[in-house]
Amino acid sequence: MLKWIKQTIAVTLLSIRTIPQRLSSSIVAIVGIAGVVIVFVAVLSIAEGFRAAMTTAGSPSRVLVMRSGADSEMTSGIGGDNAVVIKQAPGLLHDGNTAVASAELYVIVDLNKRSKGTPANVPLRGVEPTAFQVRDDVKVAAGRMFQFGTNEAIVGRAASRQFSGVDLGSEFKSGQLTLKIVGMFESGGSVAETEIWADSHLLQGIYRRGNSYQSVLARLESPASFTTFKNWITTNPQLNMQVQRENDYYSAQSTTMTTLIRGIGYVIAGLMGIGAIFGAILTMYTAVASRTREIATLRALGFNTSSVLVSVLGESLSLAALGGLVGGLAAYLAFNGYQTSTMNFQTFSQVAFAFAVTPALLFQGLFYSLIMGLVGGLWPAIRAARLPIASALREL
Image (cartoon, rainbow, N blue to C red; front, side, top):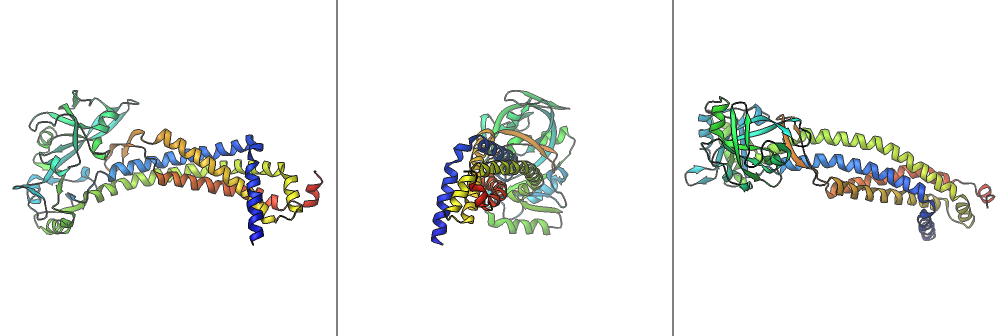
């Protein structure tokens, strides 16, 4: 066994050291695998970025109350009198006698994307003065907070970057609504940065909503207060509401899109991977053909056939690993942090986010490249191990 290990290591290192002698064909395999990894990681980074933007918006210490049966704020509706009752529930955090809760409207306005000028549905959220107490992670980064009772508004950093017409100091119009953008806020890259915020009472009048809202976002005394709060809301005969932790709500909102994008990514990578495997097969067959005499000599000197097989696979895996590393690095440099936006099909509104090339994605890309190298090198390796020694030596 020890002899076999030594032989295998020796012939594998020899195979890897001779790669520069087959540089042109080796580069073809490396580039092919790197291209697949770039596409694979880039597409999955879209899903990861979208998921991160959605899930970072939520906190286990915040709860979202909507009408029973609603799957998003767009399909929910809460009367003003019900909103008052919700704010009386036990377990809510209070600032003096005021519940730290915000009854909110969620409507869609039309803007144009800066990059292409195409129309986009952008969320416009009507909030109450307690909104910043509820969302303690939201900060005004430029300008100032809007004044309630006026037609002022603030815009999320991502929305300001992605959409035209909502720059700081500009005036935004949509139908009968006119808003002056007086500030820009940020929330750590979460989905909230895609929104425009204004006075909920102003939006109620403009959109003829009367005394109604679509959700109530509230802050709990502690995450452990969730059960107390939920039980009181769901068993109250005055209400017909459902309660979710905010992070659970946004996690569910991201499921459809991330699953779709990941599915597309795996399909594309699979199709491209087939081509890369054939490229690796041709490269390794060329390597075996150029090393026929070398392999025959090693066999004649007593090297085991399995050692020869492992050496060819080792060369194939080395090329694949190099391709995976190059592709992963290229994907990281080209796409990580790239800002874009896409449709959230559950609210039919845009979500601005940044591509996220995470260490986990880079590891997946490298692992996928090794699989391509293994499959691509297997048949040439078997051929090398089965080379007849006598006929191969006649080529000396």
